[in-house]
Length: 86
Image (cartoon, rainbow, N blue to C red; front, side):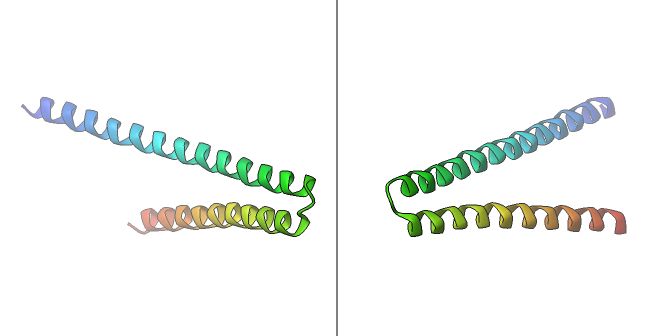
């Protein structure tokens, strides 16, 4: 009985880890696609003579990427500090 419970717990934990990895990879791909679309829109705007709008779009796009990257790193550091304090 105990072996079945341990096997079940291990299977469930592996599914959770796999889902977390998939969600993380999907989020990275979505961010990549959105950033390429944003920078592409800025480039197209620049070609058609909308320099100010292009600069705003590119700035917002890059600022959003930097913000997400920094906040993600802070959350990871905070999580690691919490694990070490336990």
